[in-house]
Image 1 (cartoon, one colour):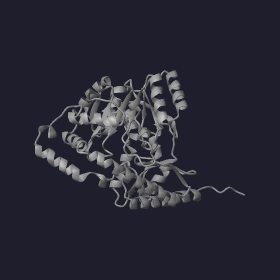
Image 2 (cartoon, one colour):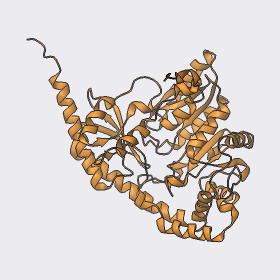
Image 3 (cartoon, one colour):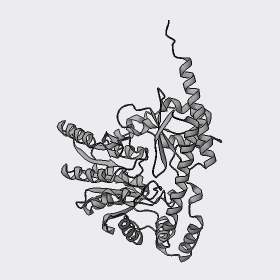
Image 4 (cartoon, one colour):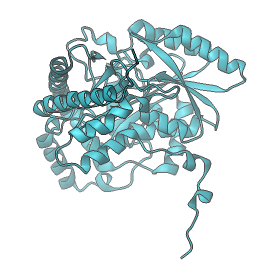
Length: 419
């Protein structure tokens, strides 16, 4: 039997595709019986509004209306789009159905942005570190990602200016800046309100677009003292310069695959055509279930419970880390969202530690997966969203043992200087 060299058939983007580090850790979890996973940012299943969804689904299916199970409009179920205009208003964003499309998860929205806006070798500026799903989407069309360092309140503006000037000086085409301002994946960072305004002003002065990814906005903790701290960049956009993405995956249920994209009408027209080539339309049942969850007050009732739940999850992880590591591990205190970004002290390496941690029965995502430049290996991303408090404490204890294993092994192989 003749073997086929399939590499010759792949496109350039196909050859460049790499497996997601987060998905890879999900495979590890599926193959293990007693693995504690701090890897994927899954919501806690016990928080899903099971009874409300059962009642909504029963009503929808009993209605026998064709729109529930039939093909629908590419942009999405019209009543849901209208509900989204009201929801966006609570975030300070004025929009209308002609500026919205429902997507199959936020990842599809990122894919649409990439396919409509980016040519091979165009540049997208991203935070260092940045979300791996966006990195994959932009790289899939041959774009180059250039990272910009972050301060405690978000992107360093001097570094942003210098990076843009250098790239344009080299004759490069820079199209947009991608940011996750609220409880960023992976760092949990909350970008300061003044920094958000500076970023919008910067994009206006330099005639660039901003892609604002905002899935965690509603999951703020008591540490956030003012709701204005989570104000969307798009809320102050008067030129249609911000493309805004958000999702119901973290607040209702990810399995429904209902998210949305907001953009200027001229951009949205192209996104609609690209979406037709991708999937024609979203699932009607999922969209109508989300619409009913909004209209019946299910979503509004969920949010305070989710904030309290995930804050307790974060507190549990922070307490466990303090007890197990003391000052040997440092981290940015997340004020919302799902993630804690930890900095390994000394010569520790997040990539090298991972197989040792896996052997101890705990996994995470190595921080190097979130960097588009350099070889930053000191960080690890720990997700506190899905495990129970008992499993969080057990996982942290196993992680501490793995670090002891790694540092002991390193010490035993370090040459001793002659006296």
